[in-house]
Structure formats: structure tokens, C-alpha cells
Amino acid sequence: MTWNWRAMRAMMRKDLKQVTQNKMVWLPMVIVPAIFLIVFPALVVVLPTLAPPSEFKADDLAPLFRQMPEQFKKPLEGLTLQQQFTILGANFLFAPMFLLIPLMVASILGADSFAGEKERKTLEGLLYTPISDMELFVAKLLTALAPAMVINVVSFVLYGLVVNLGGYHTIGHIFFPTVTWWPLVFWMGPAVSVAGLGATVLMSSKAKTFMEAQQISGTLVLPIVFLMIGQITGLFFLSIALMFAIGVVIWGVGIWLIWIGAKTFSRGELIARI
Amino acid sequence: MDEAILTEGLTRRFDGKVAVDRLGLSVQRGEVFGFLGPNGAGKTTTVRLLNGVLSPSAGKAQVLGLDVLTQSSEIRRQTGVLTETPSLYEALSARDNLLFFGDLYGVPEDKLPQRVAAILEKFGLRERADDRVGSYSKGMKQRLAIARALLHEPALLFLDEPTASLDPAAARMVMDMIQELSHNESCTVFLCTHNLAEAQRLCDRVGVIDHGVLQAVGAPRELARQLWHGIWVEIDLRGEPPSQVREALQHLPAVRSHSTEKDRLLLELDDEESIPDVVAALSGAGGRIYGVIPREHTLEEIYFEIENQGLGNGGGAA
Image (tube, rainbow over all chains, first blue to last red; front, side, top):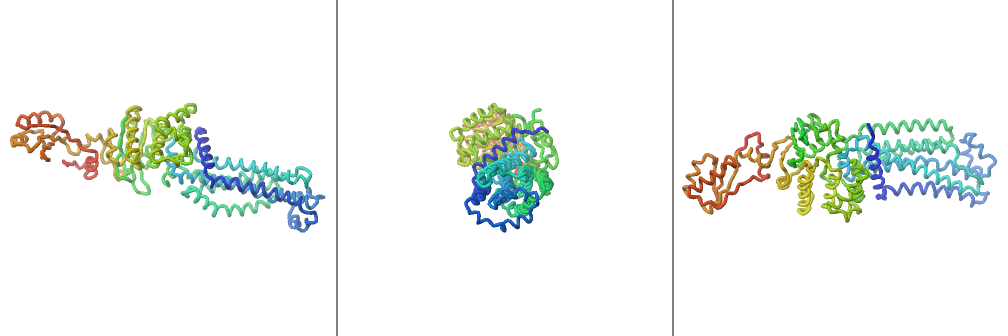
């Protein structure tokens, strides 16, 4: 079949336009990245420059160093404690946020896009248009995924600017990102978003409103994801190959969830639940 | 082919309950067809089946010559549907709503903005075109919903209770629009309603559905004839009929029955053709006739007669 891209583009444009009209939806997507990827990192890299060098104690970093593989310790050798604090803060402390934020954006937009039509009683009118079930489904997925990816990349760029500029005084050269960031941002982030979106799509088919979809995914899905992400952060101390492999698993789970969602996404099913 | 809609044994069950039961229906192109029945009779389910939004449990249907099972997307491209709830995006403006649906229905991209502007003008929404639909009155929303259903110039328009939630003035405006549409744009209209006065005014033919079963179908006058066999005529005599007139009535084979109502004589005749003869005979018998008024059965009378007895049971005179 040939895809009706014009209808799908219109669908996405309409959904995103609606998002800009709904503070409850877009506000967290702006505030959370702003706080966690700009304000806090700025503090973390700038504060060490304000404290006297005597404030930094090697003992504070000792537990971290014990877990850290040699390859990571090497670049830190010969640096002052102040520099070590800055580099570790910038490169490790905020890494989980780069999984959480795309996940959050994808699931908020997914819930709004899928459950929102039902909530606003606009689904029936939509089902009478020529758009096919699959086109509608894919357009709704992209509505959630595309902004998640854009926010992910924009956050990465802004974060890079903040920590490099903020830490320049201490380090004296550009020190971010380290090589592990690339698979994190461009492989794991999208994988986690797809998995979260897949879960949200399944939840949204049961929910009648955006809030309900959000609550279900908030209480059921997110704790599991948090747990997962907590574990993934440890990956930072692992090899890129292993990180890549775990990404494959998450991609697999995500694609599987979306495939289940796609199978149950049909006009007949949707209209019966109006 | 001449049928806009043709169904055969169209059936839809939900969890064992039959919503539409072996529906056999044919709607001609260009006509306004009224689909009448109480709430929950199966009207909305029928519209969903005919647009391929629901698939039938059994039977088949063709809409505009296309099969509902295999060509549903193409059908939906050529039909417009006004649903019972307006299905508009309230956070968006009227213009954005129409542009969105224009994209979905595949209105040519270069013509879409002008067409949207023209239809907003036509439906009296130009001045508020860029306001959020959420701020509109019910009547305005309904007008916009109809504009949306017509934007892609459908060959077949489904209207589900188009005036149900409107005040009388807004309802009248909507009815005027439907009438204009069928006259000027040669659009086929499938009108679901339980407002019988509305159906009487608009519809060329009606079908009555109840519990998913089509009870009767035809032009209102035909249905009346099937239900009551003859036609009814009031003869205005300005008083009790004189005895010669009563006598004459006994000898007129075209008169099936007669009664008096105030100072009028009420006759049931075989058909319209017998009116002149009967009038001449009564006049010849000395009756002073001030007026002859054919009495049409209202759709309401027809509807309740069908609901009460069904046509299949061979209904007698009311």
C-alpha cells in the first residue's frame, strides 16, 4: 500500500498544535529538561570553582573509583580533585536524565495523542475520514517520537554547552562528551522512548482520558522503567559494546509492545470503546 | 449504477446482541433518504457499517458502487458524515479544523485555503474563523461540523441527528441547508433522525428501523397507502350532510367508508382518481360543497402506525 503522507503530516501537525494549547502537557516537557539539564549541571560545574581546594577530599570519590574500570580512571590521573569532581559530575551524574527525558516526552505526548482523541470526543469524526488504521497509528506514534528525539538532541547540545563553558575555568579545555555519551543519546535514548511509548499506547487504548492514561503509565510503567534506568547507569562503567547490546534488547521490547499495539489498533475496536 | 447505497442481508452483532439485522436497503443517487427509528434502533451502527468503520458480521453492502469491506477508505473519501457529537477540535480555530480535515480528505492542496474560506463564509463563520471552536455556541459548532462534512464535496452525506441538540432557530437553519444541498448540489443525503417533522419536510423516502430490523421503506405517501389502503378526503359542507347526500354515498363504490367530523364529511376513497366523480355525485345529490381537502397522513401518523403493527401485518384504517 502507498502511505498517505499528507494525511499523516496533517495529523501530526494538528496533534502538536493542540499540545501547544495545553499547558498541562507541554509545561513538564520544558521545565524538567530545563532544570535537570541546564540549571543543575550549571551548578555542578560552577560550584567547585567557588569552593577552596581544601574542601575537596579524596575520600569522597573513593567508592566511585573502586567501581570504575581502568579505562575511565586513566583520563583522570594527574588532575586535581577539583577537576575530577567537575569531570565526573558532568559526565556521569546526569547521564540517566538523557534516558528519562525522552521517555517522559514520548509517553506524555503518546498519552495525549492516543487517549486525547477519545477524551475530546473527536475520535469518531477522525475514523470517518479516509486515513487508514495503520496511517493513523503511525502518525500518532511519530507525533510522540519526533518531539522526544528533538528534545533529546537539543538537550544534549545545550547540556554540552553548559558543562563545557561552566567547567572551562577549571579544566581548561573541552571535556564533554566522552565517547560513551554517543550511544547513550543516539541509541539508548531512542530505544527507551520507543519502549515507553509502546507501553503508553497499550495503556491508552484502555484509558478514557489523557490523565487516566498518564496515571496508569505513571503508576505501572514508570517504576519499572526507573528501576531499569538505575541499572543502565551502571553501564557507563561498561564497554560500549555491552551498552549497544542492552540497547538492542530495549529496542526489541519497544518494538514488540508497539507491534501488539498496532495489532489491536483498528477502527472497529476503537469505535466500540467510544 | 443508480444506487448510492445498496445492502443485502447486512448484519452486525455485538457480543451476541444483534444491532443491525439482515438489512436490505437501496437508496437512489440524489435522493434525501430518512432513516427513522427510536434511540438504539441501529441507525448509527448502520452508518458505521456503510462507511466501513465497522465491519459487518454478515451480509454485504455497496456504497457509491464500492464494497464496504474492501474499499472502505475510498468510500470514506467520497462520503461526508455528520456525527451526533460534532467531533471538532475545540482547542483549534474553525479554520485550522477545516484545513486539517481538508488534508485528511485529500482536497487538492492548492485549492484548500480558498475552499475553506468560501465554506466559512457560506456558513456564516467568517468573522469568527480564527477563534477557538471551544468558544463557539452549539449552533455555530453544528454549522462548522456540517461545513466540515461538506468540505470535500462528498457525493453522499450521512447526517446523524443533525438538529438534536439545537434550538428551534438553529435547527431550522440546518434544515434549510440540507434542503438547499439536495436541490442545488445533487448530493445524496442519508438522514438519521427521530424528529419526524424534520423528516417529513426533507425526505423523499424514508425507512423505519427498530431493534435493528427494517420495518418499512418507501415514500411517505406510498407508506400511507400501504398502511391505510385508500386516501382520505375532507368535504366541507358547512353543516350536517343532507339525507340525499348520505343516500348517494351508499351507492358510490369508490367510497370505502365515511364519517362526519364537525361540519365536514370525511371520506376514505380508493385513490385520487375517484375524487372528481365522488364530488360530482355528491354535488348532484344536492350537497353544497365549499371545499375538498385531501387529507395527507403526517409522517408521525405513519411512523406510529408502522411501530404499532408493522406493514407486514396488513394494517387496516386508522
